[in-house]
Length: 494
Image 1 (spheres, rainbow, N blue to C red):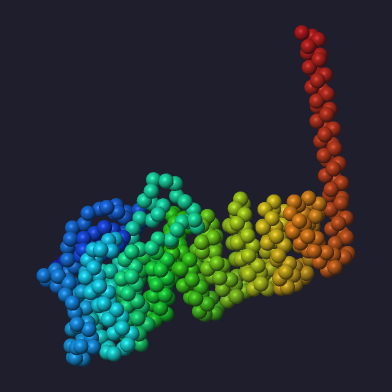
Image 2 (image 1 turned 30 degrees about the horizontal axis):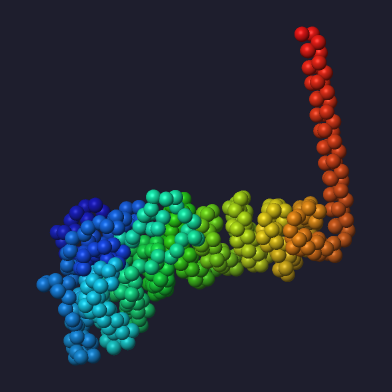
């Protein structure tokens, strides 16, 4: 690979391998000159340049030779035979990168570029003419110049303070977004267009292009991530050849997030894409997909910021169980493995997800995991945080879960009975107390004989515990007396 890169300057590259033209960080995010260009390598947050880094004013290679942005006439004023050339000229204009951090700077150039981008979007959307392969290649290059850039430092990176909770951070809005949005819209229209031939387009929308798109999911601007989500989903649907690669690349992002950084802005959007992908998995499910569930999705419950993307994660997990009910045991045991110990808000989220999974669980899979499951639920019932206890008790509002419990009540009630008695006798919250009484009554009506047996065993256990406590007190009392007596004798001899 290294030799190939070194020889790249001595041979003419093929279209699929053609490097993107030099690009620059979008000037709205870094204070650059009006028209700048730099390497098209996407830089991770840790290596982003300082906000005030000076970059020399270099005109993009696609810009006119004299470096002045020309006003290109609209498509409607040009004959059909000239529209391809006009398309290329508009692409050249759009390769100029402007400074959006100052609204009073380059006003004329910004308006020219905006008009050119809008016309390109309308031209692709209208389907008024099939664009040539060379135009498609130049268009993807122009898009690359504009969107593939060094992302600005994240809010937790450009201060000397401790990192804050991601849920408390204000969303970042890039000043360059009005122009970036048009570039993304152009790419989206190109991908979804019925005129786009995937055999041709895959030469330009290749693995390198897809990887750079995935890097942009770490953008702090939610509007950009929303466009990226839609575009990547459309690429996955249209370019079947890229599907395994996209799944693997998303896997790698999750691994870095879980085991290294625990910081990524686009996990929720990536999970939304995966939710749709999982829904389309064929049965019987491939081993690759099951490994993805175990190695990537379930460990996503571990990071502290799980609340940021839990809704999308829960949907993906539930999709797996609905697709293949035999995975319910694996999923439930995975949830128990990553169950939070001290984070009550995460516990509430986990209980909500658990209910959705149990709703899709069948009796055989339920029986495999019910003992460790209800031991955890028992601990939740006695939680001093009323929302955790309340959410655990709400599981008995679900008819399917109640039917599963009823079928296995001889195993489940003995596990839960002590927790019920403790809540009834000493829980501080009246709502939890009332719900516990209702659930306890439900079990009593379900099987009175079993309930009485559990009550008897609980009474025996309580009596035994009291007896043991009394024995301990007596032993300690004897030890204290012996120690006191030995102390008096020692004082007498001295």
